Image: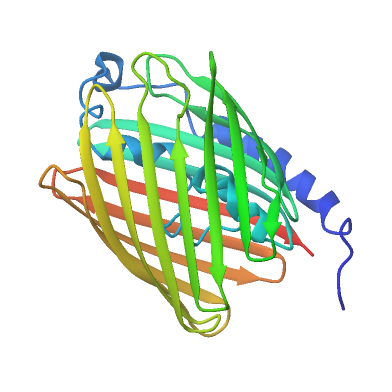
Length: 280
């Protein structure tokens, strides 16, 4: 039976309240000395990891609520309403950096949310909104605005060629600001078996006072039996380090539970999780 646009929202809103309680329990108030000094993670590709919700690391494959931060144009390609909570921690020995995201999106291109992080000595909250209109059926543009002690924004585009090929592009932190980290990212995804197997390749250019490097890599995502999805990827960070990532997701009814783990050759480790509900 097809669900109405509103039938899934009440439990989703309750879910979001529960996610808020989980965020408080996650202990975002603490921060190691490495983060206070602003040195340990700044010069690493791993800094980007904490900015983005977990999942398939491609700007061409995000069409759920996480598209708000990965590629806002992806929201226009979705026919579902999503509400989700995600959490990600980046670790080096005894030091950690933690971020959490609460995102609520409407089908066909609108989303609002908040993110919390401990990049510095104090927890900071970012308010987020996204608009993603369709230009034509298979092409969309997206805009995400973010307030975190100041305003910055991302712009993205996504195009599909039939059911097999998707291309995405996004520019992050496009407003000129002192000490800004600007990322220009592009990706292509090819579906080998519809709804079952996709391959992707992405390129990430970072320009900042800490890094000026071109990263690239790719991987796959596959659907197994019983609503289980798996993925793996390999990236080169532009500074001689390699990042290996694996992910696992479970789909049950209108709920999605997923987790990811990554490790880099400069000893950073990332652990992330996401729980979301959707309605069509």
